[in-house]
Image 1 (spheres, helix red, strand yellow):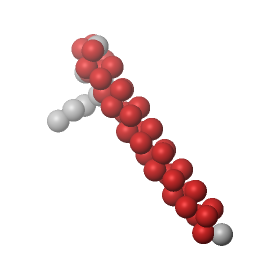
Image 2 (cartoon, rainbow, N blue to C red):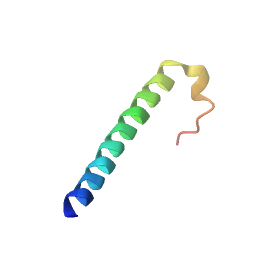
Image 3 (cartoon, one colour):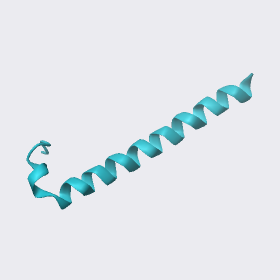
Length: 43
C-alpha cells in the first residue's frame, strides 16, 4: 500500500524534527551551564 509508505516517510520526518528540536534544546541547556560545556567537545 502506497499510503502506508507515505505514513512511514511522515513518521521519519516527524522523528527528525523532534530530534533536531531536542538537540537544539540540549545545546542551549549546555550553554546555560558552563561546567558541562567542558564535557562536550565543540570546535
